[in-house]
Length: 262
Image 1 (cartoon, one colour):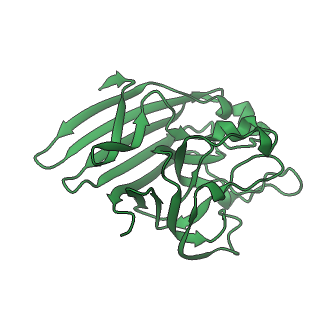
Image 2 (cartoon, one colour):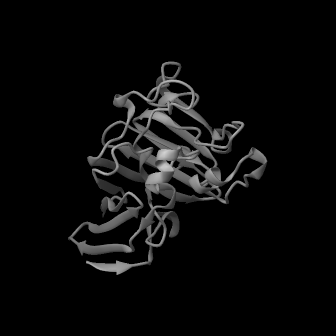
């Protein structure tokens, strides 16, 4: 293994990068917008990732890239050991496997997952999961499983205090489309996710919607899970079954590129 801060593309269409990962950016997401005091005390709003350590191997018909990050915070110098494998198949499909080992010091995470980035021209989205509005693990009875479509810009919900928004639960797949290509993310098991023009740090820093400026890119958020919405700010805390605890977690998904009209 060796350290690297170089960028790698995960999917391309006509030679142009569609999905980008940089070893200098935190692909691991533990931050929750509007973080409560426990999250702040643990230092999850100041999460530090070690430079990516990676190795590459090639077979006759495929290329495999393996990366490892160690996330440190105030609660633990090895809060999360994060390992990823990207396998590029001959047909262009990219199989991604993410393994998270969460330290015992972090027994109540706000969320756990990865973020990838798409260019600005991706504005339309489709998904097979719960919809048509946002849903969360402890607030999804009003959302039913089906196939839905909409604009990525419209996923933002103008709450009085800018915060997490647009989440989709029980995802079978989620897709972003531009005039030239559609990129689909298909998890191996049901997961949560969203597409947004705001990064978590943008929402965390803002106090009013007028403070926000949409980015010229699309954030693809795929989560093992998000913590339930209850936070004991006014009433009972989130039930234990809706919390994300320490231990080993896994998220696997495929990335495929197709014609947007398909």
